[in-house]
Image (cartoon, rainbow, N blue to C red):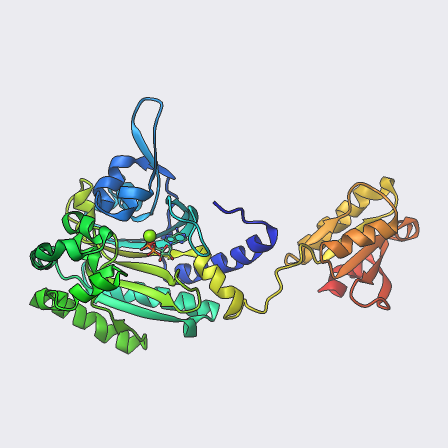
Length: 413
Ligand code: ATP
Ligand code: MG
């Protein structure tokens, strides 16, 4: 579990604000959801056989013995919340949430045990137009950050729940006689989550898969039409994609469209955003049948990408303040704090820090330099008496000027 310290947090804030602006532009509404849910929500909603539920959850007993779990993902909780509030019945919803998720994984670059997602979910709309909207929304994220040349979209359809079940049976029938030749994980998945075997990295398993039944052969006409319409809309929107028939996603609740935005720039942790349609989920957790679709974006991975690519790659996040007020006499501290308050009001984008703790001007200027300020405002006896400050550039030793307080904000603009 990582600490996000000031410099990293500054970049984080800018990335998150950018993504929030895009979400606001699509009129998605924010929801705040609890970090803890009943364990049962995930074992039902995400699926017993998934990696998440089988081996990644942080589960504990509440004081009354109830099983609760730190959320490993947001979709199940989001569906639960809207369902419980009666917001899914005969209505449509477009919402998003941000915040930490928890999974017991092997930590490495881009993979942590506490990580943050931004998730967007749409309920009550079954058509491919919604799938296209979600892809347009995520595409706009990458454009807003200037990283669109770094990502590609992989798309697949799992068909209806029926198609998925039929294919699952065919795959199991094909693999069972050769089960002993599969890798260990795949052997286990054969009975629990066979579609995930398609994801296997084992060379021997991959060889066996070459002649396996192919998912596209099991997709019915209605599902094909759904997918074809989605592809048409993406074409009109100018969003490129590649078909990845092996893409099945780890979670049990997906039907029809599944997708991942992947990048080659982050090594093994290349998926920065993933999602799809999950028409069966609401019913699975006890609601009326309600179509749904959504995605979750891994914020840490997106932030990592912005460090070397896009508009934020060159931006300087190293400084903590722009202006540092040096107060030479302890008696003038209140005066200095009021000058700073007025300056912040006049120039809301300026980060203004007032020296605290007294000391010599030389030491105060050193502090100013350490926090990255461009300007020091020197407030000595003469300045205070005349309602002035001396503005000193910390970048250019010769630039120094004494100005009236009334002219300060304009000068620093
Ligand atoms: P992966 O295959 O990388 O484990 P996943 O399929 O388990 O990903 P999802 O459950 O689809 O991931 O979560 C959506 C996104 O959240 C991922 O695409 C990724 O960007 C991010 N994510 C998932 N797990 C982690 C993690 N442990 N640390 C950081 N980001 C993560
Ligand atoms: Mg995972």
